[in-house]
Image 1 (cartoon, helix red, strand yellow):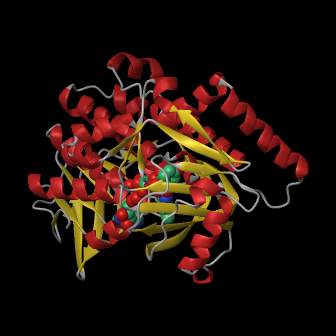
Image 2: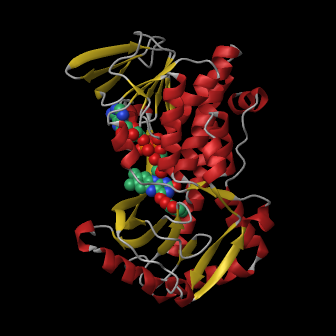
Image 3: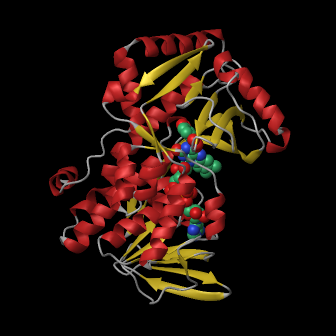
Length: 413
Ligand code: FAS
Ligand code: PHB
């Protein structure tokens, strides 16, 4: 089910052209719609293909609030699972981090696929245009006051004039690639391992997520509902999915979990199985004239801290606020502060994701001293209210200082 698919928008002009119909593009499109700001989304894939991607599973409260503002809170409130904590497993034992007691906040478990589906259906219901299977999208004139985008569909060339372009087209998209090399700086760290993920229609092994540090490698027990589970195993960076039968996956997962958790793993046929690389990446700045980058187009985090989708949401929250300021308040303070405001939150999430990945994974080539350091930090972490609170407040999401005109002005003057 997709938005009102169209091969071309009703007119040759819009206020905001959005590249990409992933969660960032779709959420931005709905927040702009709620503010009465016209927008068109150009997506290179089909709606079904976008929905077939299995990705994130944990939403911060700020993300839930933005989704409610976008008009897609109803099923999320009904089916989303509130998690008040998580469990860390090491040395064969479980240790709970109590988010609610330590921070007064919680997270919601609700798959990115369902977020995307809800946003697609809402967009179709309000009649906004998404052009799916838009080929060879190109961006022009975003360093002028008359930007435009072009694409091909069914062999026909199309053009759309706009006031602004939002590059929500992910890590491999065209938007960041359209910025002149001298105008952008990138920072990257590639990890020497990946995550092998498996989705199965089986009940979760535990009520909450379990992050396991084991000598054989990291493992994560996650879920999508009380009958749909999502598991991950750390695998070598060059591993291939063909090497992993379902049986091999389940056996390895059980070896990396404490016995009382392993015994409760219900196995079943995989619905989806894939390997994702792990990297940390940030592009600076995130605004280039009338082009704004948001979500994975501007940054990537290793999924250990469950920040990827949530950072995309906060970028979009700041961008929608800046667009409201521009069109409704005739102020460009939000636009001028956009990049700085996003990056302040992004770098803190990059740090947490890097730290949690470094703590929970086995790094090739490291020795016994490094393993002792990991275990000493884990032992300290679960025994110190201060250290546990630091993990908890980062995991549930640092405050998103939803912009006021004063904060925006302070950032740029
Ligand atoms: P997306 O990549 O989701 O969406 C970008 C959209 O732009 C896509 O639909 C793409 O088809 C489209 N596009 C690309 N190029 C285009 C072009 N030239 N023209 C038009 N459209 C174009 N995060 C977590 O928190 N937990 C996880 O477990 C997790 N697992 C992940 C696994 C994988 C394989 C990947 C790649 C990411 C994962 N992430 C995870 C991060 C993920 O959830 C992202 O943070 C999230 O999808 C970001 O959303 P967007 O910024 O919308 O980017
Ligand atoms: C997921 O359910 O896909 C998930 C949950 C937590 C993470 C990463 C992925 O840290």
